[in-house]
Length: 177
Ligand SMILES: [Zn+2]
Image (cartoon, rainbow, N blue to C red; front, side, top):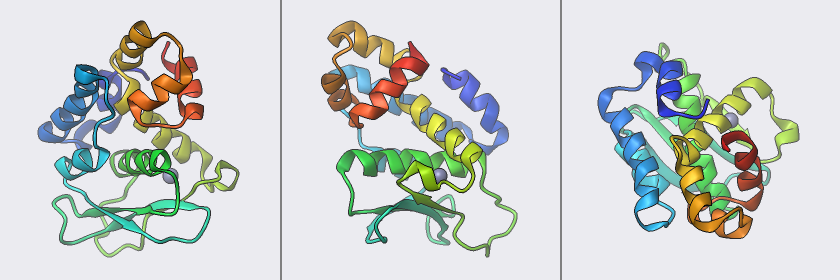
């Protein structure tokens, strides 16, 4: 899955027109000035509330129900981690929302409690899917290719352009080029 067309096919009716447009705009706007774009702004455009919280070490964030946000969910991000990790967490939780969340029970408990150490992921398949969702938002539709054509495969530079870790760029180069 490398394109928004494929991404939207997997989320089907779960993302409305405005949400799809916000995701495309986020992806495309990265190319305009080569600077990382606000994932918080994207999340808010998609109807989430986003908060920085102190979670115990090893937990990167979670998706919880929030009756006051536009889409009914809040993304909580552990503030005790790198900026790059916080950004990735926001995009990853969006993946759980669009791909996995069960919206049928408005009083359900927190849905996804995400550990930053991949070794502890409870459901590897859903974790991989949420990570791939995040990756398509950032790198899909030729975004990574465009950045590589400008900067080459300079991992440090690419990490700065997208606001992610160097490790994330290494994985993305295998997946998207
Ligand atoms: Zn997760």
